[in-house]
Length: 301
Image (cartoon, rainbow, N blue to C red):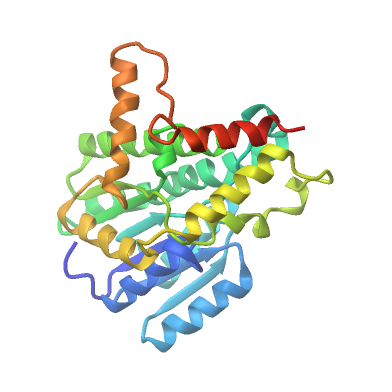
């Protein structure tokens, strides 16, 4: 994948957080950028910033949950720049709460964005990459799907989010194996960040009107929101640092990308639970005070 000069990158969720940092990094490499985001003002600001930095930018307001809009994104990418060499299926939203308290609208919102957003990107762009690879033996491409550490472990009070991110990890692992069967020219990675300061804890700002609630959030959802905001805002590793890690991983063909390798201890415990057919280990085993605080908040009526 080197050099990246004049190569094409498509980035969903490209107007903020990881997506914007991917775009900034790609711009410094001389790449042509296709930014897709549902938030118009942030998208326009990102476009202006990146163009001022010298990048060629196509910015399209795009709801990744819409198959038609991803089809349109691909068509515009082809018409403007050509087949992308990098695809970042990065757009995502977050929501917590006890799993039985997630409404149908909650499930639809998270699954539509977090899972279908990635699935649509793979469905639409991978065939274009494969066609380009068949025509040109020197064509190389790489796909990065943004999942989460929540795709490898199951934190309580985060049910629907966990489900979608586990699905993205599964999709990505399968994509890796499927691509290996048919081509050596297209690779993929899955990004599993832990707590990194981004705007995901405020993703409700872009929740579609038809999937919003007329009722107030439940106690467990309010607790999850507060805990998420605190954890994310206190993160010490920046989205810019993650972008650098991601491009390094692309360069060396690394599949799993972690922001906080120390968090893998919880993944190991989960896998040991599975291998030994034992009940899931208490996630608060090393922080019993946190468990008791959360339990007390959830049971306080």
